[in-house]
Each structure stands twice: as structure tokens, then as C-alpha cells.
Length: 132
Image 1: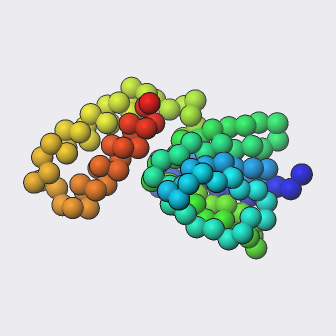
Image 2: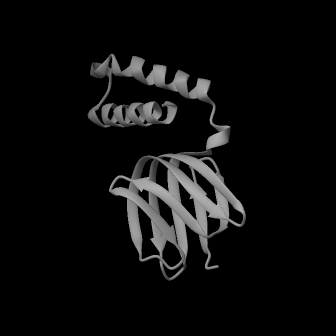
């Protein structure tokens, strides 16, 4: 079976590093499945479950605000995300608390600049999708 290297990084930690057979994700451009020697690709991800097949395992990670880059020469997919976690480790109550904080912040847009408003709106949408 053809394998490729997958790296998932957040600003705080390396979430996953290893060889995988297949990855399925939803980029901002649509659903896609990547396998070894995929064409060079760079795409953005607002929110997506990331289904990773490696060995006999299939794991699902939850991604928010990410960039995915596949390098054909290196046969490597690198995902840089503000948030990435195994779905079975997602803390629902913590996510709900964050969603409430974001909604409260958006009630006072005059205290925020346009970048902050856009960022918080995107986080709100991603969290609502994650919790549904």
C-alpha cells in the first residue's frame, strides 16, 4: 500500500505525525480525499472533520481554521491549524463555554476591529458546526 507523511500542527503542539494511507477532509473548496503522490495542493479549511486511515486504524480529527498543503515531491501533507484535536477527546462543555464567550464578545462590535469581528464570526460558525 502506498503511504504518505501527515503532519498536523497547532501553535501549541504537534497533534499527529506519521505515515498514512488516506485522508478525507472538507476544505473551503469542497470535499477531498488525498492519497500518496497527490498533486501539489494548498487549501484552506474553516471547519472539517479529518478522517485519517493508517494501518488498521481510522481516526477522526476535528480541524478549525487550518491550511493544508500537500507537497508531491516530499509525498507529505502538512496541516497547520489553530485548533486540531481527536474527535473522541473534544470537550463539549468547554466548546459550549467558548461559544458563549464569543457570542458575548460579538454583542459589543464597537469594541472590536473588523479583523476581530470576522475572526470571531468564523469561530462561532465553526463551533456551532462542531457542536451539532
